Image (tube, rainbow, N blue to C red; front, top):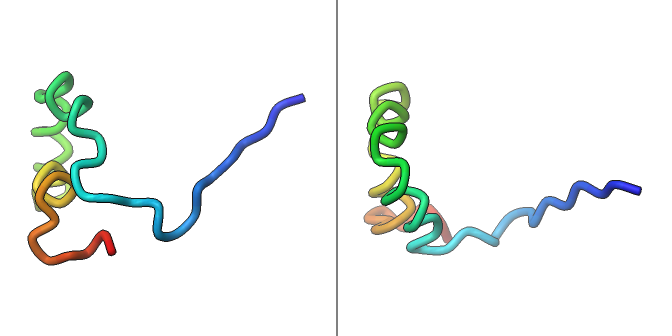
Length: 52
């Protein structure tokens, strides 16, 4: 049996994914370019309190 579990809304938190951002810096820079904003800044600092 396989189960796909999604945490839903409200499970995001400031600092989420810090280790991944450090480990995959080149990919994070590419994502920032594509998105047009810093995904690391959003997840690590959340300056506009978008994560809840």
